[in-house]
Image (cartoon, rainbow, N blue to C red; front, side):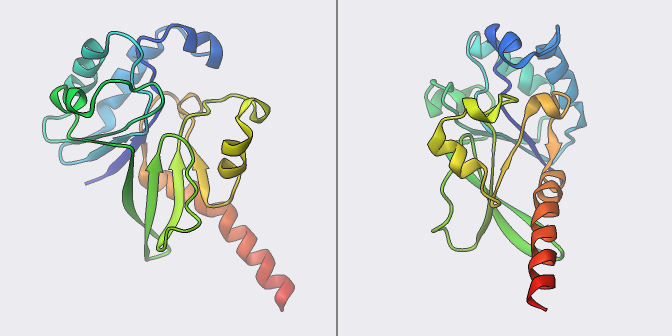
Length: 193
């Protein structure tokens, strides 16, 4: 079983193509790229699923996934339908955030998954927050409070436009988040010695 992350699909949102410089046919590209998800996997959608034609896109999204996939929606600021609506349209779990478990150097870690960055500093046992929301927008366009959180080392921004409009394995995100942390730890150890 693999765990996958995808975010900010914005199905039915025509202006997002201009805002994020998405290529022509980006919606079909996302649907086609769901083929990497296999039976028994979990796919976490980190929010902003669709803006228009919600039922059409929920059907296309779930038709592209195997039947026994656990499809989790972590609601974003554009996901205005009720939890009940999303559950009736193919999602297995719908919430404002979720916890995923993964391993870093053979140690189990808990990761908070959300749409916007969350302050996880007081959450005992949580290693990092993986989130979406900002797309490929320049940092100066991010709201200051969210920018401050997102730039902390215990956060990782998943950008759909930067990963080829496809779901990415949780393992990949953990490894990408861990690389700079490992470098910081090595530098700090060097200076203490």
